[in-house]
Length: 138
Image (tube, rainbow, N blue to C red; front, side, top):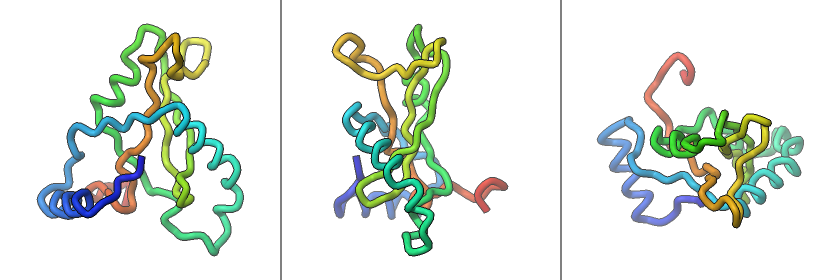
């Protein structure tokens, strides 16, 4: 779930020097268990993160997801909308958690009977992976 390691860090530094475009071919998909952990942690800590002692990177400015992955989330005959939950990693950083929603407003979550449903997270979170300047982020 969290991108770590020397190779990944080096790749991102090179990537940022070469381009400000969206990194290709990132699945962003997480398990239901990871989504439950993230959203539960967020609910349990959402008031305390407003404490001034907390790291300023707890709240992202934005998150970016690849188009193909978001479209694949919604590419199901039962999917009518997308819902964005907020989750929190173990280091208390807030992340978007995306799920498809049916016409009755129910989350379409992966299960034994519907293993093809997806949950997305692990977007490109700014700060760190920030987009080029625009009227919405400067």
